[in-house]
Length: 331
Length: 309
Image (cartoon, rainbow over all chains, first blue to last red; front, top):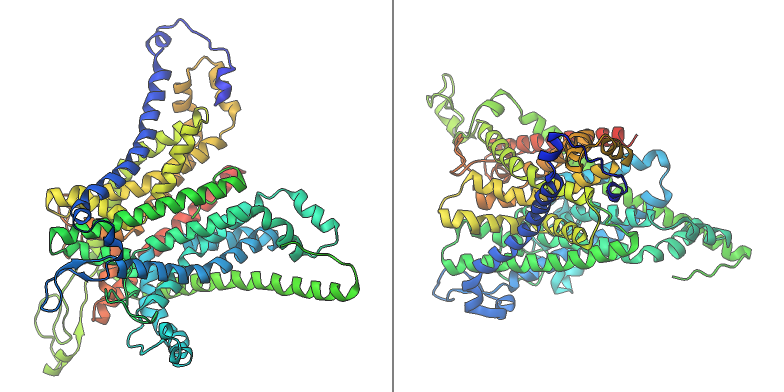
């Protein structure tokens, strides 16, 4: 609204104008206040998780992050201890599996939607991909548990475990239940596809046409144009989109809680039950047994928030660099 | 990345083959993304649709009872033998979940609408400064933050001190998730309002705040409502923050200061249950949630298409 200044203000000398002469300043302050509230919300998230995790930080310090034992309840064999490594490891591995599956696929979908898709299909296909993002995560979990798990067991997990798993410990069986990092990562991949593909599509559409025309004029095929002139131009934005997808995968809770198996033992195989940070918080915080237990879970949340904040900042910067304007709000 | 282009026939054949194959790959990738979407929606429609009946919408949780017993009266059904108790049935419905979801989400909407809309006005109607960019970044941080973290905030901030799970805690947690959506959509829509509209009002001598409130916002009202609907759909589907704040409840409760049920929580609890009848209810709740999301998204699609034209 910079043009408002250019319009000469008519200072009507009516009573209404006199009574409301501070209206502009007042209204600006009002909207400013609510804009500041948004900053306040972010601060609240940081401060509350920081304060809530005070006991855990006092007891463990940084070693909390690589402690390998998570024992909320005292047993004969193990004292009470809270080490976040099983959860962090599970989060990293499942997100990595999701990335390996979703990054190439998502980028390919983005390329298709922006460069190759017939115009008539562009709208409906884009809408369908965005719908994937809108479906609540608990429904992914439901579908994963009730439908996908058995299929995954029969066609993916068992064949791999019975062949490559004989030699590679992290692919080994035996597979008792279809709960583990592999299936979690696969479902997470489906969930982050829309993020990656929507942002890829947006940054590719921001690539100026002269890039394409110049390459075509040299006699390149369509794929060479895409791979040689369009994708490199938008590389930073695509990487940003992949990072935002990673951020979603790291923090995904419900699907992970339902599919990961919630076991805090560290198993070598990706087909065995494990846990992720988000799943651990969701399953244990409502029935925590002690203050330090609660505090450790809140510390995990703080770690998650810190990581996603960092990823978001870097990714937004990269996308903004490419598109000169934040793209991909749809995700 | 650099592509060396030579124009002899042999490399041309190879290049056109590579072109075809890789373009095919992108089509395959898109198909791969559509398949799970279609599968999920098909399963939810088929299994969820089958679970819907009158009881589903009007009844609350009922404990599983042997199949030979009438779940309403608790008396044995005539003509069923004693051995019918081997099977287990759990009828009942999710009215408590529907009520809880509506109450918690609408309350959250009441909290987040003023914040979101006024912040959106600030972002769109006043000059763009680095400060605005920072606020947009804060919105992105909030919508990018894992929802479980927001749940933990609600738990630590409200549930812990008050020592009770409550609907209001859930509403406040959802507010964190809805505000960024509303603020950003409001901003986008207000930016679509042509400047001529503002200038016309200004020329009539209206001060800027009056212009914004009586001309610009009403012009963009459809879009703002759209944003609110999107936020509502997002909030209604959230599970993780609600698990930690409203906890769930098997009874019909209208008390915002005690534990409440919500549809996504019921989906989560019922699918883990050993009783097929309760699994069916889970599909039913999934059906209701999916329809809500689908409906809102289609509506948004139609409205934005109309506005942009």
